[in-house]
Each structure stands twice: as structure tokens, then as C-alpha cells.
Length: 234
Image 1 (cartoon, rainbow, N blue to C red):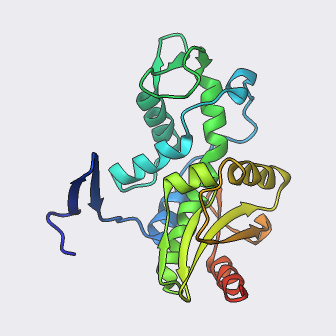
Image 2: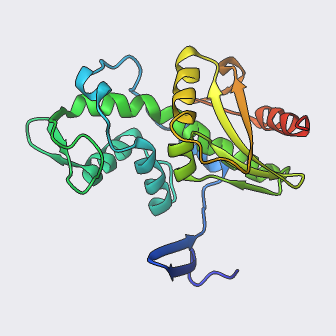
Image 3: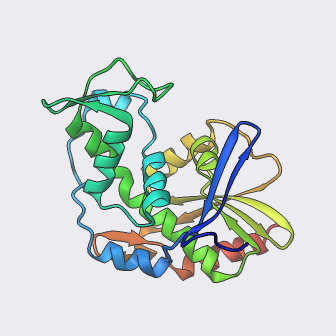
């Protein structure tokens, strides 16, 4: 398919839906270069009990919408600002409420912005790490197709959909920590839309990750681990 302008391949309207197909200009090397210069202040921030137990608009949606629109990795300040501007009504006293247009979330509660940011920033490193791994898998050329779906990630808990050796796999990634296992199991158990895929979990020890700036990233070694796991499937 040919580009129509510098980045757009196609715009489609069909059956009450619309699609914008554009290039993704962020390679794994671009991510690594960006991450080297990114500050990170999310460690050991105080948790806000109300924020922690509330159902909030998903951070992952803001992260991938920013990537789609900007074709760049957001800084923590850019992501926080983008998230709050898109999904909250913010006042001048450090408080915010979820916008009425953000359906199904905690709309009647007033939150401290500092609590929102603390919770968001705990997710920020893993969002970068998972997208970087998607690009590593794509660039490896080991697999016939590598797909990231926000819908599948959010509702089913799978980070990658991979076609390999004429089979389809739903891949869940998690770091080997109690929090990592709990969070991944919680996501996978929400729903079960994945019926036509072989389900695979790739558990990764953080000590085997590469530290780039303030962040830990998966490496080509982990792509090879995933390949071996898919090859071992009956």
C-alpha cells in the first residue's frame, strides 16, 4: 500500500466505524535513544487510597493515543498532561474529576492530581518496555506477523498477537515479581475473548533486562526466548 502523504496510508469509513492507517516512525533504536534522556520520578511516590481503589480511565489508552498522534515517546510530564487533559476536569486547587464523556469510570469522585500522577507513573516504565519489546519482535523478522492491540491488551491482558509457523499466539509478558504476576493475572482473568489463539506467558527476570537511562528494557535475548517457547508448542 502506498502513502498518500508523508505518513497516511488510508482513511476508511465502514459500518459506523472509521479507521486511520498511518506509519509508525518509532523504531526500537529510537525508543532507546529517547529513553536515555528521559527523567523518571515515579519511584516511591506516596499512594492515594481513593485513587488506588477507583476505576480510572486507562493509562494505557493515553500512552498509545499519544504515540499514535505524535509518533514519539512521551516524557512523564507530557503523558501526565495528556492524560489529565483528555479525561479529567482539572481545577486550580490540585483536584480533578473524570469527564462525563469518559464512560464507565469513577465520575462522581474528586481526586488529588498528585495521587493520579503517582499511579500513572508507576505504569509508565512498563508501558515503554512493552512497546519497545513489540518493536524488537517486529524488527527480528522471526514471526510472520506481530500485532499490538490496545483492545486485546486492556480487556484480555495479552501484550502481543503473533503469527508464527501457521499458528496464532496470544502472548502475555510480565516481570518476575509478585506485583507483576498479580497484575498480569488480574488482566487475563477479566474476560476471555481469546479462543482461536494459543496462549503463551513469557516471564522475564528484571535482572536480565538492559538498563537504559532510568528504565529497564527487554532485549533481543528475550525475543529469542519467546521464539523458543513458540517453537516448543505442540
